[in-house]
Image 1 (cartoon, helix red, strand yellow):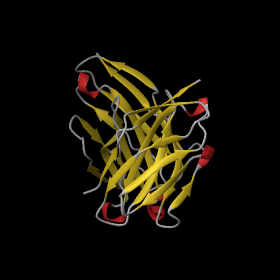
Image 2 (image 1 turned 45 degrees about the horizontal axis):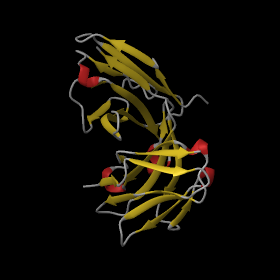
Image 3 (image 1 turned 120 degrees about the vertical axis):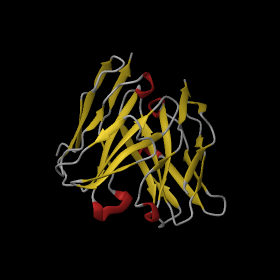
Length: 114
Length: 114
């Protein structure tokens, strides 16, 4: 069981470039989440999805977009990278019927925008 | 609205001495509370969780936490620190009213002195 897989693990972007952070889970979880973690801070929710075709904004959505065309995949898109988006990004998933028992986190993507 | 406050950004203890990491929460409903650990350049690992059963919760690696509703606290303790405990620790709250979204504290960095 792979769990939640994030790619890439590291990336350096130039200001204004675009990229997609990939997140895939193989547990058939309905709920998926994208968080960012800035130095000295806890995780902040960017976007989440409660199922294929349904997404919603979290606490810090500006500068990001998401899509959920399948249950397994929840990519995060940065259209015009800015230095403020330098952060570590975590994807997570959980089953709908397990409440907050069942969160599984990916290993993170460390993004630097220069 | 929910919130979490970790009262110390850094805690430094000597190896073999007790550890206390403090967390206060705010929640309008019956909360679930968690402690996660993040070792340097690693992902997130669940240490323990409180979900309205016993107020004293035992987790992995000898850690435990006590839920005190009257004090709105969920402090993390360990009787004897080990060098391998050096990491960042996050207190997290969620509840059913917010569809089990996780609200994260800013983290406490635990430093172990030899």
